[in-house]
Image (cartoon, each protein chain N blue to C red):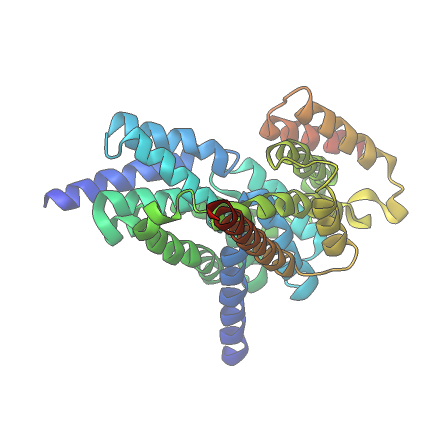
Length: 184
Length: 192
């Protein structure tokens, strides 16, 4: 038991270190990385738990990456230590990379190679976020055969409200919660 | 003693930023700026903007990257640790309480009903930035295949995002290398 637990923490560390190392483009882009590792690859978290987790991350303060790591670490291990390992592992690559870059800052600025890589990464990030959204459209959230029309109405209403009516995401999620209690 | 005072003030500043920013990294930038540039004058405005650019270029959590850079500038490696810890700790504690609470109440009917409606709403929340970011990334008819292929490979073919990120880096370096060679060739031809 002790041994398997040890392995779990090592794996948590490795997975979140990797996410921290390749997590370009901010929190939303990181979601597809986290989802791939936690739901598809390691199956520590079910897709429903993952979607709930993303929702909670949106309404609590702080960076979404930290929120996801803490939450996922807890779900995977069932205790606080798992959260701490996942969060520490996620931030560690940032730490190493930023301290190195701080020394090279002047050389790094306006470097044509860095600019060219960033141009490609920005395009990929758009796709990463689109993938994250597509992967969250699941039968668990949209009903068997994606046939729950209430989910689709909520989805479309939420999209319109955030994109065009500029409703604050937290307020939007709170409204959705109230709607859920009424209609389900 | 004076250093300890600075570290203490820094810890409080960054903990405040971590506690009161909702909505992730980009929402934190103006708050960090107000604390470290305007109120405490630890860093010049220009330096701060350079740090933001650098933090955006690097992988990892944007707010963390900025905190580490700012902390490092103010008080070296120790400052970087203090800033990172302080800006991450509040969200760590709050989300942990949420996780514990929700695992405890996972069979609660009302909470489940709430999440039934929240889940599709969250999908919309993730989908919205796709369009605004596409503008920022200068998506055009010529390069739109890159984000489309990325999304299809990950979503439809379960390819790890890491491979696509690596491929994008290789493509970026190759393009810059090619551009440098072409311009060098042009240069020598003009010399002749």
